[in-house]
Length: 331
View 1 (tube, rainbow, N blue to C red):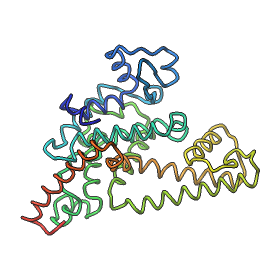
View 2: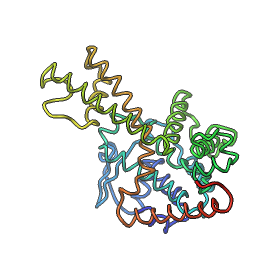
View 3: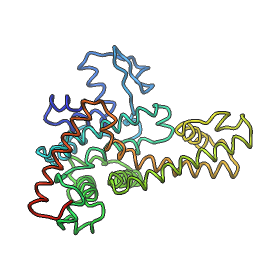
View 4: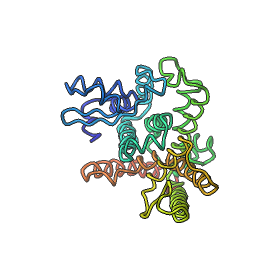
């Protein structure tokens, strides 16, 4: 419950971001604090069990240049730029979306997740969640457009707020506001840094609800195509085929199997190659929409949490309505 976290600290985004992005150091520190013990084998296997705690682990430190102090400095600067007086689009929401992004990864099952997404993708999506609404003014894109604000003019009425949030975050990470103390990607290879930037860009721009239905249709189409292609291969080669089987498989299972085959050099044939290409498209589409899913996930949460966010959203739009009534056309 992110609201309980916000009652414990005035910096919920810093706490949640540290716990997720500074893994496994953060988990080890929390387990030590809670006097929960896990043995060495548990740590090496990526999942620590102790007492009543079962910790899902990304093992970022084994694949990426991670500096906890630098990440925390970035989170402090980002949290400082969220307006605490805005009812909904504040740092509590950012922390909630980061945590929900992590939960969506958890739901995939760790083995399946790491087969489909590499550490750069996972890290970049969680980091993007922390600044996906940074500097939010508490008004909508339509309000910005009707009022012809400076950012509406700058971004030509296209995903106005999303472009602004992205620009702030990327400026701190890569641009003219970059500082040594929050240079999260220091030490990363140029190609990896460029990939991370692109992942964050696409995920944040796709939080614009204007793209929701088109993106959903595209995602559903890709899922249907992958299912159909996997079924055709199964029927052609029988139940001994590398993928598919007598019963339809969950889409994530198919993606994990294809990823395993590609990495191990298995498979072959034109149909298999075409399926691999379609799976790559689907994985890219899922990566682009995970943050959006986390951003609009409140109705899927417990009633208490969902109603709390609903009231906050109502309050924010009501405040916008007062401004609209006084100054700008209806939005």
